[in-house]
Image (spheres, one colour):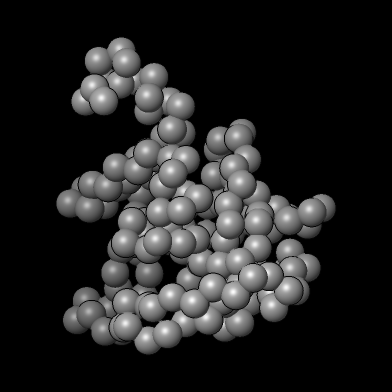
Length: 150
């Protein structure tokens, strides 16, 4: 699936905006489901979601196992892990993800564990686009000569 980066306001930039690889996803917990955009972030270890999404999914954040990590600014961040199901809009498969939910707000992030383990992502920042393939599709293409053999 070929996707375009999205242009968002950014007052820290002279031009007033920045382009981001945002992906439409569905999250499911029990019978509750939420649709939204998340940042595809290869530098993030975990998939991280804000309190507002936990509320919509009817997740009691503090009922999950605690998970502390350091943000990009090296500040300690407290979160709680909950198993959710994730689906990329446009794909039929749901994948289980042990996501970290924060008690604060922020951009939903798709990181290494759970997301990059299940999808191939090719960033083409220079063209403001990125490509998402299921792991199965990527492996099939590699077997047929469309990529490096592993």
